[in-house]
Image (cartoon, rainbow, N blue to C red; front, side, top):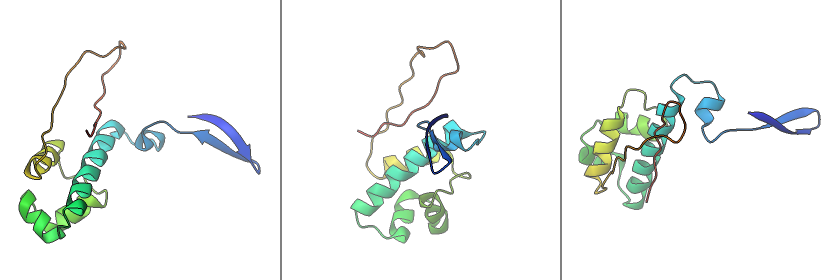
Length: 113
């Protein structure tokens, strides 16, 4: 992050596109992927006007676990389980593997079409 401005003596910094990285979480990339997947699951549940109980039944998970995931507590839920949830909600999930343009470690991004 770099300082962008100062307001009333308080430095304002420009964040990255990953708030988990900005906060120093060690698994920041994975957390961002899970957050985006959980957000999409939540949006579908909301658009379908499903109760959490009915959604949990459709997704094959206990309602308390779904509730936690939708509130951002998804550490105990794998990306694979979240992808399965999207499939159960009638979504195709495409995974594209490509060579990174940089000579560094690659990254995983979630794009909702």
